[in-house]
Image (cartoon, helix red, strand yellow):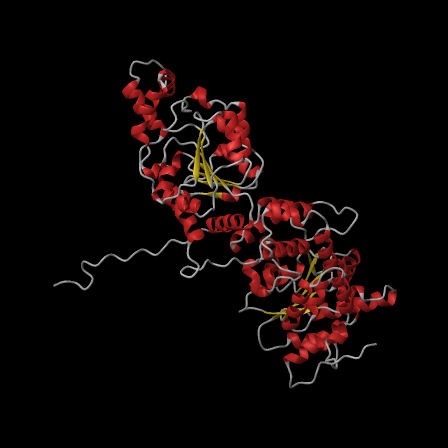
Length: 613
């Protein structure tokens, strides 16, 4: 009896997911190809050719010595091979190597040829002697390429041929080729150091954005010439980046660009990259990139998966809230340091829903009325509480879970109090009323800007309350957080942009306001939405202080962030935020001032047409 599926072809395994690194790299390559930026330079080592059947170098050396150098002396394989190589003529060298290097291109080279034909690369440097790149290009009928072979080309002319290409694609064979009979860089003396002209060329080429495939970085001449500064370095190797190159990757902010494991195998890498860059839009639409940054806004509770950093502080705060003997908590930090985002996306979002009910309230000078209205809205059939103490009692007396009341922007209440003895007594009474209501059924979290007088008042009103400082993140932690957001979103930011922005956060203000996390988020948002994520575009956009001044105006002078947060409905916030994005300077300042002066009127229905004063 024949089983239903007997003899049928086995089902194809599901395609492997493309790594975020390769997807981000593809986005950047596409951006450079369409935006006219300098394209990545490919560097190909021996590891790229192994899957095509090319024998590893050490094995070639051993077999050649065994066959042709039995008569030579030397204490090691390297010495015996060097003696054999130096004594052989160029013709003999070619005959030695040809059996090892005549192979058909692997699928990785075939995919690389397709990418070259489509214009994603215009220059490759190979340390290999094989002709795999040339054969792969010829196999697809692509002929608009030029091969520059060191040994066959005058060294003083090689740089000119690279800088002024005569074809769509140039392949530089830096250590010779089967087609070259004058120079194979193979023995130690030849690999010790490059001649000055070649050394200068290699330094110049390796300062560009690079994709290095299958190269162990063992050649001294390459180590000495390789530029320690420049663009991004994507190192593709199953074992990761070699130890000798890691300081360079760190210096060039490319430690996150080491593609290893299965993705680091040349054929897998080239196929995945080609799949991202060449997939038809109709059949396989690319996954859209996301903008993980906030434009003049804080993170919401639903954004918890996009809020990086402060994990330890989050755990500490949640632990304190769970303890009944600490019902009052004060979170204090500098202005625009991300306090609201931390409270909503880190603390409230991860508060145990089964154990607590979280209520978020943005403070205004009329705090008592807002809390009374809040309590009344929860019991619409009962009479409204008569005062603050009654409203807090109603919140604590509910039948459900204990309440955690977050009072954000509490400095508004403090700053609206007259700076007199009577004013401070009134504020102290408010504190005492709030603190007296706190208990197992009601926990209070005050979120406010750091202020010495506030500290004194808190300790005087309730010495048992807990004060937690939200300290500024270190530049290193900010850098890690930015990398997390960029990698998770699938967009590309030149690492130098990240370094420049983090540097602004770390630098003291030069006679003006400090550069804050709000500035960083807003600038990153604008850069991402305008595809201004290469260093060249960023430098052009920020060559003057115009962008930063405009953002500082919205954040500091007019405090648009708080105005938008105070709008009662999300729809109104979106409307105003969208409008302010496209308003040119200096109109933005005038509009922001109008909102500030007429804020109460904006919450009311106005006649149309509105009478002019």
